[in-house]
Image 1 (cartoon, rainbow, N blue to C red):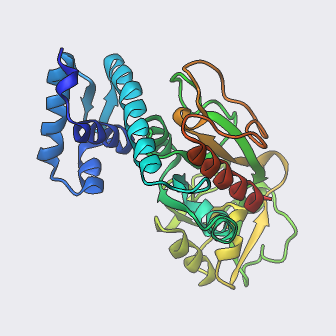
Image 2: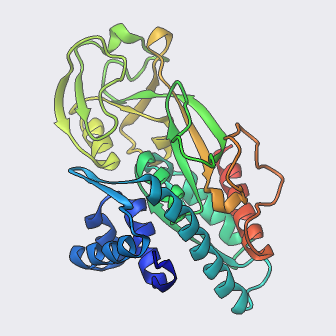
Length: 321
């Protein structure tokens, strides 16, 4: 075992591979070729004397040894970044905070938070990354982002089984809606139930499209990944789709969001999750619910880092109200 000889860049590549879930995605994010990334992982595994990643057809997952190396590599990378910021002589409320967010949070919540932060704390730089909740959870665990706005569905279990657990607080809990065109028969309804959803033409897509509790085989008229494309199809009268109310501010004028009530109601939470390195967790503890970090500074680094993370978190909470 000879980890002392491993370059810092190799540790960064390893963290990025864990964060992205595949060698190809990590290579794209870093601007490397896939073979270059693969060589860096091989260097680290030789130095560790053990396999760190289990290669699967759909990507990679950490082995037990990989989790140990990731935990320490993340701490080293964060300490180096903190040193660079301190040496740069940044003011108290300076620093770069890496924020991840799931797709619909980008329609309104995240832009509002960043705009408010630019007014209140212009010295803070926020870099953002969109992704699915599972991808962002991997990024938090790999410490390639500091905090993330995530989506959570019943029964609202922890996002992973790793330790230390993420510190999590609930920003909102709202029922999903059905998005329909203004000329659709359901557009004027205050709410609908499961029976009203039968026989509809659906616009499907990755993650969300057909109503989750639909009790019939759906007719999928169109499929789209992009939310704007889905909602434009709805506005054009091409079908209906499931959508969170958070998308309403960004929706075309020809779309109405209709709540679904009764036993078919589907709740979703928007939560703010902090990477263990950002909260100063030492390796034990459990995720907490709403308000768990409100009003207290985040640890795990110099004062500038803690203040910047706290300011970003406060801006997100305010935007979610």
